[in-house]
Every structure is written in C-alpha cells, then in structure tokens.
Image (cartoon, rainbow, N blue to C red; front, side, top):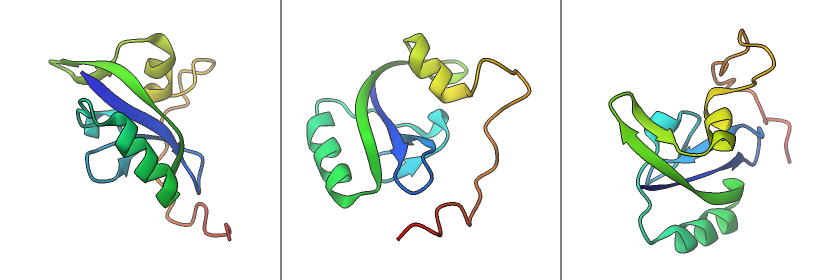
Length: 98
C-alpha cells in the first residue's frame, strides 16, 4: 500500500493524504496507488502541504501503519519523551501566516 505524507504549510505539522485533503492522523490516510506523482504536483501547487512524498504502509488490524521507522516516528510523535504525543489541533495555529 502507498500513502502520502508531508507537512502542513501553515503549521508545519506532519500530515497524511486522505484522498481529498490532509489529516494529522495516519489512520485517516488513503491509498494513493499509482497517482502519487499527480497528487503531489496538485497539492504542492495548491500550497496546502509541502515536502510531500510517497510512503510504504501496511493496513493492519490496528489501522494504517507506515512500514519504515522514519514514518512511524512521524506518525506517532517525538521519541525523546514518551509523554509528548500528538497535540490537539490549534485552530489559531498559522493564522499569522501571510
């Protein structure tokens, strides 16, 4: 299975392509199939996300899980302090961006 990840252009948050938009939760990720190049071009041109790339993932009983350790860390948060988890979205984050 192939999914896309990148960073939200306004907040810098790690985001995952849902098939229609971006989510901060890997569990919302959608299979991109062979369309990754087209989706990446469209989304970067629309300036919704940046540094977008394709990720190998598995659909497990626990949901979608990236295969490689780098993306597993991106999906779950920092490794230095286990108490730091994905924080709730801040609606004001990035509002200062022009």
